[in-house]
Image (tube, rainbow, N blue to C red):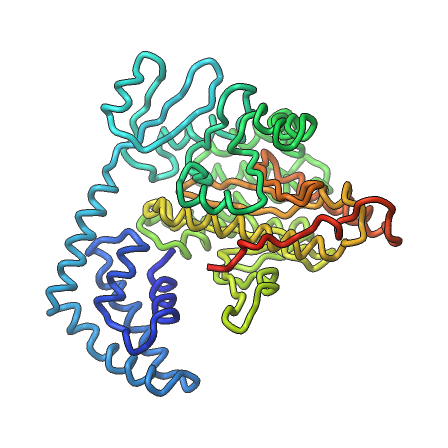
Length: 467
């Protein structure tokens, strides 16, 4: 979450008569982790936003006068007000403590789930006889040894029959009390936070073991041969890297679009760093999305031609069903994907800030937001198939990607036969392409079927108010 977005939110939600530069800084300190090094950037953003309101002919006259008065005095306030200095000193202390906190990665033996939690060295010592610990002082850059280990060892884990399926590093923090309260109010089953035994009791044996076998499912077209090719490419440097990338598609079938997609993404990376290999790490969320995340999806759109993507502050359409006289129904997303075949939003993404400045507060807020948006998207999608038999309706899914620090995780949500919503973590994006065949099958359900239909069980939860 960047400064510009938070400042805009403050100015939209707080009555203009109460606008105050010090209050804006306090609001930022409650929602973003920053230090005095960002003072100039924050000052510029506040000035810019206030000037926009002052120049906006559609804004209230009183709001325009207040904005003009404030933006002409922002610089003076930043230089002379002791309250401003105190806020930045407090943030410097908080930033320093968080920046150098100790993160202990606990690898449980005997194929137990890998768990990463923020903890102290004393806590780790208490478990030294049973676990192998790795102390990680910083999560950035992505090439950090512990980050590499985390990527290798924590794809969607297989739920054990008697072990709790703990959340792996940098994923939805279901253990957070605030997130738990939110999910407990909804008719929602989060499979990635349960064991096989718990899932069997909740959704039945068959579905529980389908979720438990995620790792064993084929991840075609990501084959072992392609994996070896990519490893070879990533070992190259400079011009050799580019040559190796271009050779990726040299001796393969021209219809192999996935190899072509990989080539496009890797070349995009090469041209990003060919002149200036050292990229700045202290970047904002939008820069992080534009340079490091968007290429993965823009080339998916141009290569496979099944979805289109919109980026940064994109409006979600489905939450509009909650629009009232007091609620605009506006939900802004970091990215969303619209399927060409039915023009429905079936994927969205939230990014919890840049890797160097990702906070637990932001991750928890994004977790609630993505779950809520998934439910809205799924309800909107199922409304197109109300007369379809419920067995088919439960196979219809929507998807979301959540980015926390350097980890991207893909989730899916569908409806159960009793009307509850079922959220799972996916090991492969292949499920997204399988939905096309399902849609064609559902379209053949022209006449109202006998027995239970989607119409009979689909309900929008009562506690789905927008925040």
